[in-house]
Length: 346
Image 1 (tube, helix red, strand yellow):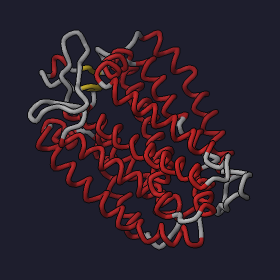
Image 2 (cartoon, rainbow, N blue to C red):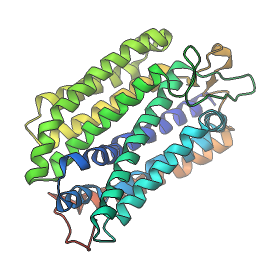
Image 3 (tube, helix red, strand yellow):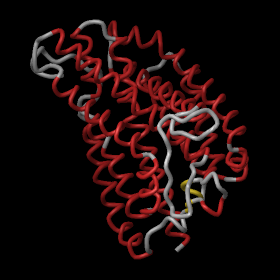
Image 4 (cartoon, one colour):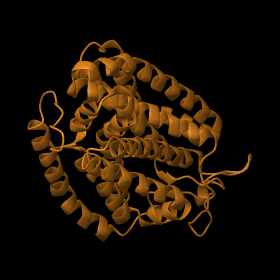
């Protein structure tokens, strides 16, 4: 039984990491597109850079949520109870992003397209901030009760925990800036001309800001949750995550003159940050502020062994199918993108 719970802990972590890396550059592109694209043609070029992949990338979020429901139902129940309002905001933002991409070119009206471009940007901005704040709450701890549930106000007075407070907002800003820099790497790879030139000008400052925020967040994590911070130095997987993080940071800075290498370096940085965090928390999946006896762990939050064994049977083929589809899309999506003719695409 302990082996099954550990396996599922890392399977869920892998799927969330894949979502952060793959859908992360979509969010970054959404945040950047109103700034690096000045004309309607340039904005259609930016949207063409993510058009074939953005909806497929969100499959990993669905897969992670479904796997969490199968393996750790108490974690999902507690998370939905305490983060209800932020989750609703995230769902609305994801819906509005998809609607904006699909509808923005349906009418040749400047006002119509500007409205959906702005909606796309705001939705792309909201999701990283809220998801980063949620991760910050998991690291800091939540007021989990003996019943296994908790309540958190979205904003709370000073001195009381809330979904959005100083430390968790810092985590949200870190995620936002990192994914925006990741999106810049993607646009540098997939676009050319004036758009690529503007992206090249902002990419390195964004990554330097992301690295600085990562160090700042690490310092405040040590202040807010010293046990989690110190745990990282005793976990081999946390050391692996730290190596990925540092290697990725070095790649995006030292290989900045290239197009592909910075993207993969940024992916390693994001994956490394997440691996370090979840490894430092393991075996806890939701920390309680009231003490470790109230925290949810891979053991007390898990479902039955039969369910987890059955889930392993379909997990492998399902992931292979999703990975095969993604490989096929990327193979047919090689090279630089061009804006579709007006009225014929994004």
